[in-house]
Image 1 (cartoon, one colour):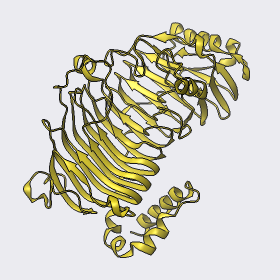
Image 2: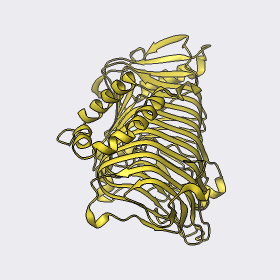
Image 3: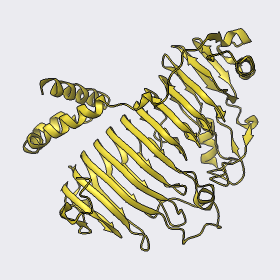
Image 4: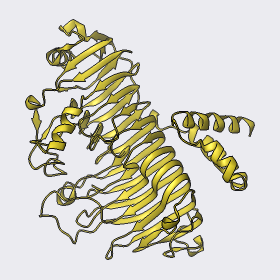
Length: 472
């Protein structure tokens, strides 16, 4: 138990150290919660240590490449002024057409490498050296366009097509983006200002997007100032995202960190995210287009993530029309955030959200601890079917602590499609403002055990009803 306590104390100190001018968890616990901590500390310690030792990153093998080529061999100049789109494209064309057995590493040396959008190819590693910055050009007017995603039917922001991501891959396998914490900089402010001025012609580009791809590894890279969502694997399987840092100002619009979308077997671990929107948002298509396309998100693990956002820490939805299931979220630290855990959907979405587990989540300075809602999100057009109701079933939230939490939570289902088997266990929020003491619940069934403040009457006071017997 000594080693476990030391490890917990070290991690607690690291979490506190990234929050300037904030009360430390340790001082809050000692001064206000000592009796409760004595009771719950063993559970917290052993749960934390167990999660710390677990990993899913081995689900995608990392192969040793047969050769390495440098971007400078293709005429690139890393002075921050010379446009290097053509050298990137030439280098990747060579990798694609020579097809070296075992694949090729494209080495990006230290320097600032200004570029427009470019495509990756299979069996390659994009390696960013320490001090390397791949920087997007600010020439938004000549940015390439592409078709909307079939599961969305249009651009997410505007009708019609969408701007291509800075780094893009379609139909690929065995791709690695890694390095020595080099940076991919989207220079997003030009796009954010267009959004604020309502002068966008099409939906903004992501920083990195993979479509219809498999066996993808993204690690040890900094993603900075994305125009829109940062990392967007869509229609993918076997994706590992680990040890990444994702940064954007809190007032940057729609700069989600990682958005797995209609994808399966996705592993997100050991990362830090601070952006202007959800840290992670799991999606699967939008209304009638997502229902028709019918590709779910499933088998997704999010573990050892730390971050801050004015919106959600971990979100599911609201675009869930292809279905979202079998999601595990554990060992998460969220601070200075709008909503800690947010599961969201709407009438017209159809689809389902089921078999979702959150455990060992710690929050500090959060507006609302938990929200599960059936009235969130807009629609692509007026062709959606309001009778296409989502099914939310089997959500377990266990071992969640929060301090400086203004509101505990709300669980608001849909009248003709109530949320069921919503199970809360050892969920405790402190610092609640008096006017927000009560939970708000409607059209929901489930159970609660060891929840503070006590949740709504719609959740049974004991798991003895059998609704949550497997969750507690």
